[in-house]
Length: 134
Image (cartoon, rainbow, N blue to C red):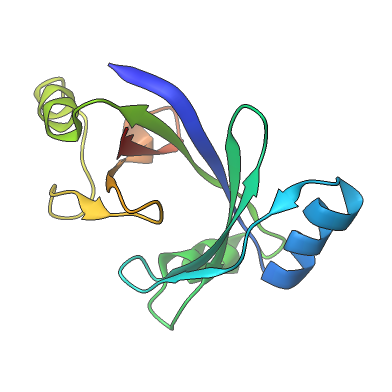
């Protein structure tokens, strides 16, 4: 069911400093910041030959990333994102196997303009999983 790894998301306390570290220190191609108000984050994508890194920073007081950074002030890996061919079929299959879909269970449009869902980390070995329709 899952396809390729789309990205690894890292919550960061300082978005500009993190982007500079990847651009200047590691020589990576760093995109422009994108505000994603529906998800409460500002993101920057780092392009790699085989996947992407998504830097996450809180956008607004109700951002889920703010709580993550309160618990992890230096930042850290927040989630991994896998592509799926049919997000609704994937959701229905996972729910039938006992996995919990976060939110209302309906896909939202993510930073790539495609439908996404998040799966409860307690159902996936402590890792928050994002599914994105390919």
